[in-house]
Amino acid sequence: MTFETTITHDPIEIGAAIERARTPATGGTTIFLGTVRDDGIDALDLEVYDDMARADLTAIGRELQERYHLTSVIIIHRFGHLSIGDIILLIACGAPHRQEAFAACSEILERIKASVPIWKKEIRGTTDRWIPGHGE
Image (cartoon, rainbow, N blue to C red; front, top):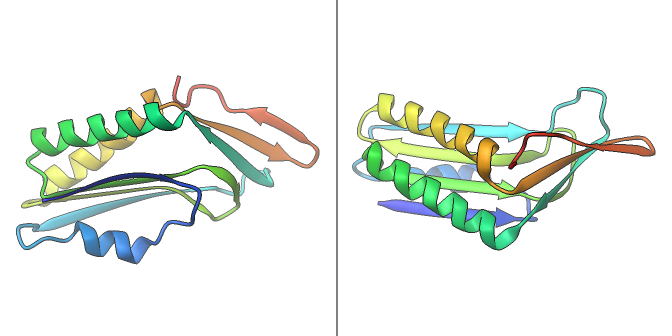
């Protein structure tokens, strides 16, 4: 089994994460990529309460790995100043069958957005605005 949770300032290496998610027992792997979209902003600043976020990501990943009988869970979340098109979040879930991989990946995403202490601030020119609801 593969299990990894990472919080990083560095760009996320998609191919390497996918390869780590593949195991001999994996029949299906789902990948979610959250990116900074161009909706009138110039960039995002992400802040994280590091120790708590790491613990939360690990708890969420372990719980869902057990519940869905996953062969792999990889969660990588970035922080810092991100530009349009940058990857914020990668979630990879491997399972013997695709249904479990899809369900777990979706649930991990929703749980991260609901409870992990990571906050986003939109940057528009010389103004900025915190986005409510993320990690609260």
